[in-house]
Structures are given as structure tokens and as C-alpha cells.
Length: 459
Ligand SMILES: *[C@@H]1O[C@H](CO)[C@@H](O)[C@H](O)[C@H]1NC(C)=O
Ligand SMILES: *[C@@H]1O[C@H](CO)[C@@H](O)[C@H](O)[C@H]1NC(C)=O
Image (cartoon, rainbow, N blue to C red; front, side, top):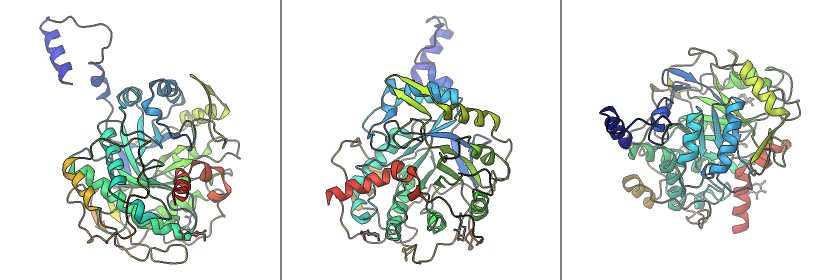
């Protein structure tokens, strides 16, 4: 920026002739036109306009390919051209290497008006659902914070996920929710303490009927410093023809007055012909008061058959699903105006313990003391994807934090009244959903599954 200012000043007085071709120095100017996204009320906003995620999940190589597509110029250039053609405004990237530079790919994405949602975890640095206390430690948080350091400088960084599908359909996995929530708290505190732009932080939940509501309530209950900025879940239930048959009407009802922005972090059933009828529903007044769009799973065609382009070296071949998603996006643009969004954010009541939800305390684990230093001094160089890993670096015994002792600043924007009623008041029995265990994506997309496998191997 500085260089640019000096060059243009010189150009203005005729000392340097203005170059007819764009230079590196001029690019930041162009990118500055992409507004940053904030979470406010129960929606996202890009400047003054409501923002909907109209995106795609980007994980070339699948969940087992532990590589960072945004650190490889050849890879991202090949795919950004397709993203643009597709018409998406957001991609989600599951794994990034926090020891590498991302200027080229992030800036090319910004040039095309594309935002990025980043998972702050990766297979080696993540919460292990069956050994959560041990995997929540300073080494883990150093990696998470280093990912924040690397990406928060880009205007097109839309949000961070503090975890992906850590909690699954096994009741005992719900006990790991405390550590995921603690990670969310720590990430938000880090962003506030480092004086960074307030990029929203939240969790991406698996498509699990028996704990979906409790988990959502849990992530949005308690003091403001412990709550998320949004909630997201993966949803593969639209295998039928419409909003009602799919049961999405119940998911709207259940999340009405949830108090935070919600979007689908993965969607797209594959045994319905893939006409992406979901887009019409997501962009209609049936849903826009509660949901802020979603991300289709997924871009590259992998073993699980969800992808819409076939990759071969430097080329990306568009498949049938590509054209179908492209037409759905163009046929159903984002609505204008607030489209029913609530203007205030609020908490909900914490869920109570039952046979599917085993968490019986509202207290969160205390941040590891060494991690507190990062708040002051920064996280330093990230370990990348091939570091020693963190899952076994901690101890099984972590004291609980004093409630509300976390973030001094950086609470969600908007009014934070504490609503005492949970949003879920509806007990209508919807059609039974295709649980994640029946669908490919859980097994295959679940980076978390991979995490727990690695955890098991290490034991
Ligand atoms: C959690 O429950 C599952 C299924 O009941 C069981 O297989 C697994 O061993 C349990 N894990 C732990 C850590 O208790
Ligand atoms: C809606 O909420 C009710 C009550 O909490 C719950 O039993 C039901 O499973 C929820 N449905 C969905 C689709 O989340």
C-alpha cells in the first residue's frame, strides 16, 4: 500500500510514467473494493448489504489428502477460474498450511469477489473427540492461532471454523463439545487481543439428528465471551423434492430466533439427480429469515462421488453437477434487503443433560497457561501440516475456567440480551433424516473422522 502511494504520488508529478498494464502495486487498490463481512443480528453483512454464502467446499484430494490448495498457485489458478464460472461467492477450505504464504491465491480469489471460510484445524492439530482434554493444549492453540495470523490479514477471509464434525452420533463424543467451545472462545479472544478485524468464529457440526439442537444451543449459551459468532451444520437431507418433504421446514422452525447467523457448511444429496433445488429454498423467504445460505459439498470429484469437476493435472473438467449448480445459482440470486433477518443477536438457554447429550456443566476448561502468552506476544510461526502434531501434547486434567473470565472485548456485535428460552420449542416429528452414517459425506468429509483415526493410531 505504501509503495503504491509513493509510486502514484510520483506518477502524479510526472516523475514516473503511469504504466498501462496493472502492476503488483495497483492490485491492492482493486481488492479494496471487496467489503469485509461481519456477523450482526442473525445474519452476515458485506458493508451495508446482507451477505449470503453461495459457495462450494474445496478439498482437492479429499479429506485424506492432507494438502493446502491455497498455497499452490498452479492448483488455485486452475480452480479459481472454475469458481468464477460457477458463480460462487465463497469457498470453504478444510486444510491450510499456516507456515506458508497465501498472498497469491487469496488475492486472486479476492479479485474475483470470492470469500474464504477456513477450518482452523487440520489432522495433526485438532481436538480428538475421545481424548478431548489431552488434545486441547498450548501446542494445539499455537497452530490454531497461527492460522488466524496467516489469514486474518486478507479482506476476503469471511470466517473461521473452530472445529468440524468433532461431535458425532456417539453420545460420548458430546463430551468433546466443551473443548470445541473452549477453542471457539480462545480464537475469539485471540482475535480481540491481537487487535485484529473481528472475523466471525463458529463451529461446523455434523448432520446428526439426535444432538443437532443441543449442540447448537450449547454453542450459543452462556456469557458473550464463550458464545460463537455463528453456527453451521452439514446437511444432506434434501434427497426429496421440496422444502417440506426434506424436512427443512422443521429446521427453519427449530432455528427461528436462534440469535446468531446460521448457514449450511456442507449440503447436496447425491441421489436426487443433483438439481440443487436447495438453492431455491435457501434463497427464498421460507429460509432467509433464519439461514444465510450454504456451501455445496464439493468441488472436486473424489471417491465419494460428491464432486462436480474432474481434476486431471492442470485441467478441471466440468461434470453434469457443475452445470446444474451453476444454473441454480444464476436462476436464484440472493434476495435484496434484509430478507427477514433479525437485527439483534442473543444467547439461548444451555441444553440439559440427557442420554444423547452428556455434557452436564456449563463451565469450560481453562485456557492452557502457555497459550495465554500468545494473546500478548502472538503465536509465532505455525507448525504447518507436517509438524509433530498436538493431540497428545496435553494432560487429561484441565481445571475449569471461571465463567466469563475470557474475553474482555470482542463480543458479538448487536445487542446481547440473554434470552432465557431456547429456540427449539417445536416438537413436530419431521420425516426421518438421512443420518450421516447412511450417507457418504460424513465418513468421507469428516476430517474429524480422520482425526480420530489418527488419534487411535497414536494410542
Ligand atoms: C464411545 O462409545 C462408543 C460406542 O458406544 C464406543 O465404541 C467407544 O469406545 C466409546 N469411547 C470412549 C472413549 O468411551
Ligand atoms: C426440532 O426440535 C425438536 C425439539 O428440540 C427436536 O426433537 C427435533 O429433532 C428437531 N428437528 C430437527 C430437524 O432438528
